[in-house]
Image (cartoon, rainbow, N blue to C red):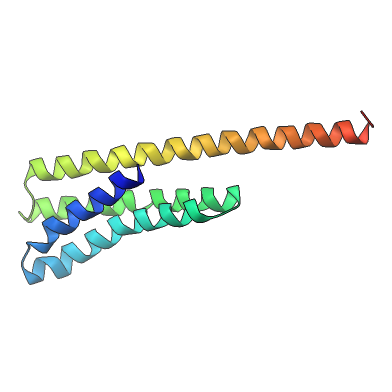
Length: 129
């Protein structure tokens, strides 16, 4: 899914690169930044060693969704994107967002299982079992 996130970032870049200078500066740059920010946080979280650090970056990666959606709607309202283009990009973003949520859920579940195993080990060790 990292590859799909990068592809989405590149697709938005290609669209914005065709806009005139004013549109690129006012809507395009923040749109590209918010999209790239998500990918960068996912990559940084993946590189972290501790579970809590990983989760923190995955949580942060979810935040730009609303900002990116805002800029896409601004672009559509200002006739830089067609409604079809906006819907396509929003759907791709939602797909990435669902994936991030599933990764967070899996990591939390895995962390909880490890914690239970550690707690069980500590109890058994204290009872000399």
